[in-house]
Amino acid sequence: MYRSIKAHITDIVIARLDHNCDLYEAILQLAKDNEITLGKVEAIGAVKKATIAYYDQTKKKYEELTIDEHLEITSLIGNISQRDKAIALHAHVNLGAKDGRIVGGHLLPGTPVFACEVMLSRCEGPLLMREFDDTTRLPLWKL
Ligand code: ZN
Image (tube, rainbow, N blue to C red; front, side, top):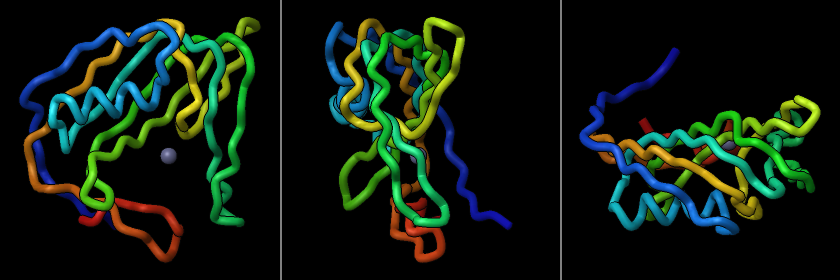
């Protein structure tokens, strides 16, 4: 049914991202600069446009989507673990448009920040690596 480990939050890095920086790259860099190898991410703010992806479960591949409009980050949630011995960010984002529409998906680089507040929680626990999963063809946690 599931595989699990236990970890606990030791501290939280609080950051305001710079205007025009890339949302994905900035959060990943924040984790690297703070040597966070296991953690969770929450953020709110706004972006100038967004690049997200939807994972097609039948084709087993990501379909990239660019939304070229100003959007609110109504919710960004993600985690930090390790992939190929490097710190890796996996984040999903819900974005609100001017007319109240919500779009969302798997966050990719290519999302310039208008303003963004990030809370990055460091977890202490076992090493959490990603490995290729044959069933889903995704890099899932090795537990
Ligand atoms: Zn994802």
